[in-house]
Image 1: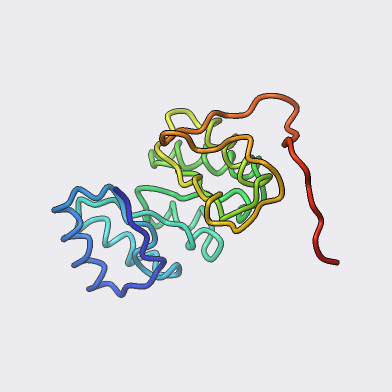
Image 2: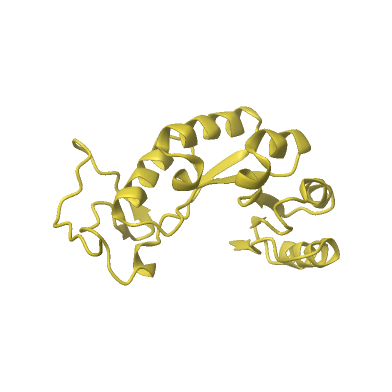
Length: 172
């Protein structure tokens, strides 16, 4: 089990929450402190057995700053927020070489970006469970999903990369 605080807690609240989460074997909490508080994230890692994940800290402070500060056990990578699949894979390699876990999620993307995120996750060796089951959060999508979640798993689409199904353009 994992949780995401979206940077909403202050240091004392985060410490208490992670101590309680440890009793329930929560694996990690994503962004328990504000994105800018890398020092607090690093201190939190030293005081609890629950892992600390960074997400919003990446665009605000940069991957290098997060790694240098020792602010995370897990780095949450969103291809659409990081500039696409190639940059995300490069970031994943850097995270893994630092001895940390890389997890791929979406920014609740439509089918094309979501499918790209599936391919990114599949390209990371021994990637843990990722946050890619976000299609149901959309009222409608641009096309049929070539990589639906079935039984907690996603089959990586093969082929030339085109997504089958009609694409409807709405808007100007």
